[in-house]
Image (cartoon, rainbow, N blue to C red):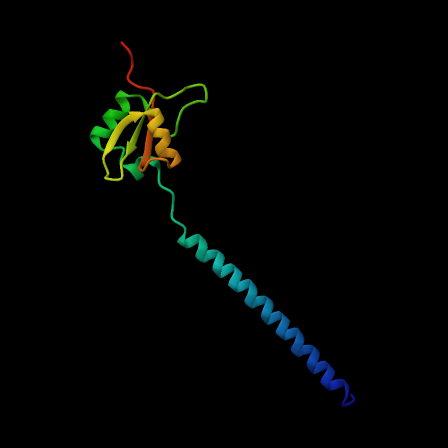
Length: 120
């Protein structure tokens, strides 16, 4: 073994160790940030939970006016909507006003779209 061969082998081992350590550290950070992102993501709630649709009068209003929180088939055109005002009040309004709330033209939150009460 010559004196000149030893430093080259030592440098090669050092470079390989550094590359391996850097790769492991990078993968650990990537996995850690991925787990952190998944852990801090809010879980989606059902529409009925987010707007309190199981609260008496609102549920009755929705049943009486045949409302849906998810919408209807494309061939069905709703005539009314239920919106929550910025003050927290729930109102039955025209579909046009509900659409304005949905599109952000009017302040509030669209709760449901409705077909209107059944005709006798």
